[in-house]
Image (cartoon, rainbow, N blue to C red; front, side, top):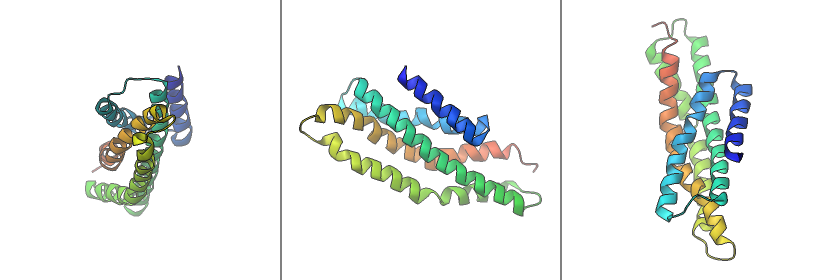
Length: 170
């Protein structure tokens, strides 16, 4: 019950913020691909699904959505700035706007993902009291942040471009 409820709350909050189902769908589309990294690392660590792993997935969903929102906000800012400057925006103008908006977020997204990954590595590979439970919480976060970072930096701008391209006249 907790994971679907968490996802429903995230969707509601995103819709309240963006007021557009397409933008919410772009951000929510990041979650399954972020989970790919989590499942991959869980397989490599030979972990089964448990309550602790579920908590790690919930935490990953929050961070993955956060970096997706950051990217989408800057892509929107760059897009609307292009609309204000260009009387008849072309496909090349849209590409430049998407590259500009995505380029502004490379370092912050990499720093966010990198700090989460580096911060959780001692928990992931630590040995001591409680490390068996804590490593199962950290595993989905570490694996998912790797794939979420790649996804947010590469796939989200491309999907945003394809979506906005449909609205251009030329």
